[in-house]
Image: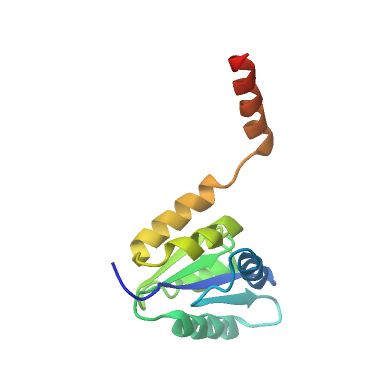
Length: 145
């Protein structure tokens, strides 16, 4: 285990990264060593790559950086993947609010590898078809009657 927090950079289309970060902070308070980077048509590829690099440098305390992107195959992910070979960096695609909330409570005392796996698994587990969940609860109540 490491003493320093693993840094986090959220990279997404439009203002999604900033809005996800703002939403997470609304729920859990300020998140340390987390930056958001926007990818939109106003910024060229080299500018966005530079923005990601600067965000990585700002949040990296020596324990590595987890980059969370909105979707695999999109520009945010493709640009982020180019950093995999440079430092202790991991990229997880499909960022959602539950992932960020998990990061808020899980990063302390955990290494990049543990955080990557936990956030990935947690984010997937929190994607739920509400009607299926409600139907299971109703079936459970009927079985008890």
